[in-house]
Amino acid sequence: MFLAEKTVKNYVSRLLAKLGMERRTQAAVFVSKLDQHQRPEE
Image 1 (spheres, one colour):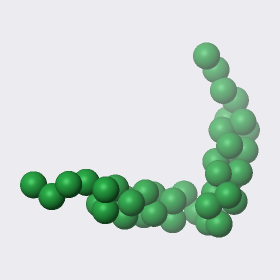
Image 2 (cartoon, helix red, strand yellow):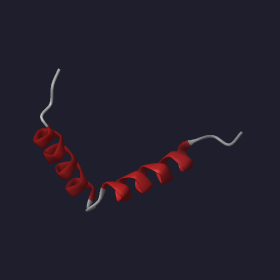
Image 3 (cartoon, helix red, strand yellow):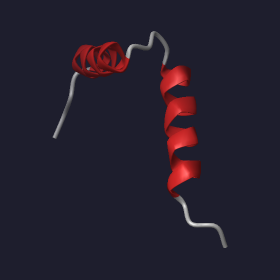
């Protein structure tokens, strides 16, 4: 399967828009915080 670079950029920009974010790093921090809250403490 092959996805053109432009297709991936479109997917990422649409996802960021839905999340109300402008940068991929913002999304990464958001997911990291979600992950920390959902993991059970050991």
